[in-house]
Image (cartoon, rainbow, N blue to C red; front, side, top):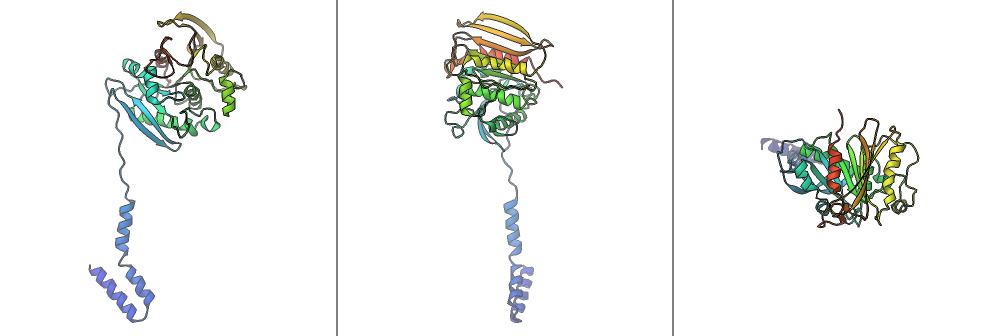
Length: 339
């Protein structure tokens, strides 16, 4: 208060000496402390809400924001001890599906309880694609550090940190557009994902437009890369031989890419069988020099465009087929990244 009185007297004397500008500048000092206090108050950072690890048996809904955009997701944490460092499976739904619908149709959450796996379901926004398809066919979504590939990789890393997941056991799978996206994202981030699962999808190829994507889906070729490819991640593929949406010939694209990658001679083992629901299937396993399976291909005879062995409560499923969810988890959990 004393300082304010002194400043006022100084301004008054300057005014009496006919120095109005100096008097005005002196009066400004009266307001500086209050203004500075207001600035400091506005600039003080406010603590944001801290996310906590979801409880065992929970199926949460949340959103993740990164420099690539905002993405909604569902995350299932299996029952059991919250201290475990569990594997994480990222599941990408198909067109017209939601994360919840995909979880219901694949029954992946039930298997997660049995096997101890975190399951993450990113959900495509209708603003990004009216039919909720992943935009796998456009160049901006096909490489690391950009678009939907970057967004899903960022979300994956977020969940690894949130749930203390095992970074050596991270997998990605999907169906249809989600299957094609899983193949692309896995290839773009080989140091993040350990293995890939593709159901009724298209292999990574020279596709950069919607027209070329539709051509590939119709089985008319033109999608397969021609040059040497980098090392391929272990991949498991399911496809119905009566699929009218994504032609069954697309299953062969994964073997084409594996051969293009020149990872050494392959040994083929073929098994035929019948599912409990009455679907015949042919399973081909391509093994590398070390004897490990680099590619496992399941062709389900008589099946269309649906998740094999899935629940009728979800969309785009074929309950009569062999259990694709269980087989994918078997394939994934046998693999971890080496130190």
